[in-house]
Length: 262
Image (cartoon, rainbow, N blue to C red; front, top):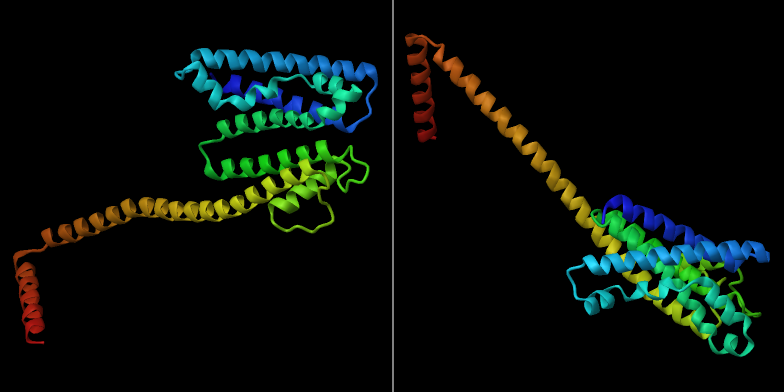
């Protein structure tokens, strides 16, 4: 697939994530919700076609390709399905945790972004860190905000909690109260510690590589300067007449004998 095509699908997936957040965080009219559902369904069709074309052109077997990209399958569930389940009394209670499936759209988006920027370790690490923060925040917002006694009631609170958790600051002003929220919190904590360790090692490797690159650039310049210096000295010797040349030889012999005596 061309980079332009990958960028187009990634932008489309990013807009769909924003649409999901709007659907979760705002009280929309029926007409607005219908427009969002139609747009999201179009995104789902695009993602499904993209998945099919990549499956056809892949060197992997269908089973291995699906196993490698399994997280894209739940990302292709339209958001109106979750709202239909949520409005149903019995199903809404039984499938409350299924709201987290919407997180796979975020994971799908971030995986595409990381593929685009995989050549730069620092950018890749920054995207991975952002992925953990955003995914954790969206997950906490989905499971915590509907609860009456929740401490995380809006997406801003969830984002603040995720950033404090990933950076291992942990102010304690925001924290999950549901079982699902605590599970997400545990995962974010573990990933946060890993990110800090990887960040330190990545920065160290980048500094070492930059120093080595500077030395590689300096060495050819130094060799060239030495060659030019030697050549200029040889040219000066060639210009000497016989008497000056003999004087130079005698001086060198005197210096050698003097060094031997010393």
